[in-house]
Length: 391
Image (cartoon, rainbow, N blue to C red; front, top):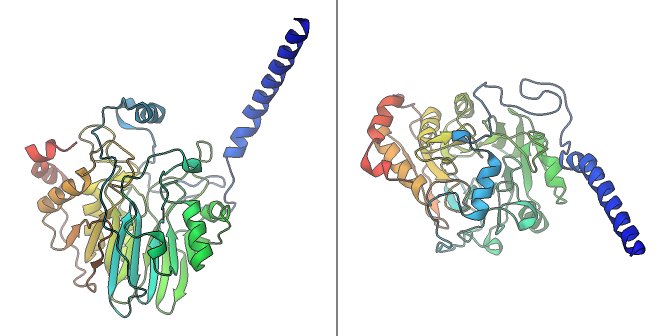
């Protein structure tokens, strides 16, 4: 009996020691230093921030904490509309290359898009994981298989990684791409440290930085409005960005993951030349009923405004219908986008495409900017039974 008590006391002592060590060590372990550099208008020497004073609050509306939201997701007690557990996708096999002024675009799912133009193959925020989360076992589960099977991808020349969230920076996918194709990986400051954990080299530059890829083809890392973290303690240790890729026939714009912020980063993207195609997120924007966007996630309304400000020839809404990240129904983003574009009366096309179905994008045309739509008038136009019924 005495021996058992001593044994139990020893175990308890070591548990207390281990807990004390964990409290001391684990937060430091999770709070990785991804980048060291001089202070700028968006880096305070330790963490990055949005310089537009438009807010980067990651709390949810209605006073809900992110912890309560995650708990509601895990227990199924969050009142969200049901999503399908599986959505049929007709996978396609893209050509090896697209030459000249032609552009072929295939949405693979979420923010992963294959863009073929100018003789190079570009992949944005590639993720082939079944779950978008740590260790491949946590996080939302994929409801659609990728629109292009990994082995059917053409040789990838350029990979754009917008920030370090798990649904955008998927280390296993990056590792597979590197081992197969040795692509040029371009990202923003600090994310190269995370990508290197997968044994993949990358080029990380600040907003406004330009990375040459081929004659006449450059990547410009452009500002957007978001935040970054792999864990809870390493918030904003790495930068987030959008991208402009200069290409024959007009530029490609990839928004990454973003809120609207001050909208001026759309003007900056336009300054690099005519935008032939804008890839813009329209999902993960609703956490309470009727919500139309958050500080760091645009919905269809803000996507349409950003598209208008860039004077882009064509826009495609992405970042929806693959992983369930928020509270809107599966098909609310494209349905709401259709309603917004009808109310806004844009002269050019912003819509969605089916996963796995290649879309041919015309050469950049008229780049004039349509007049702004009055927000109050737009909301009045959207105040219909059909839009109010969208969950």
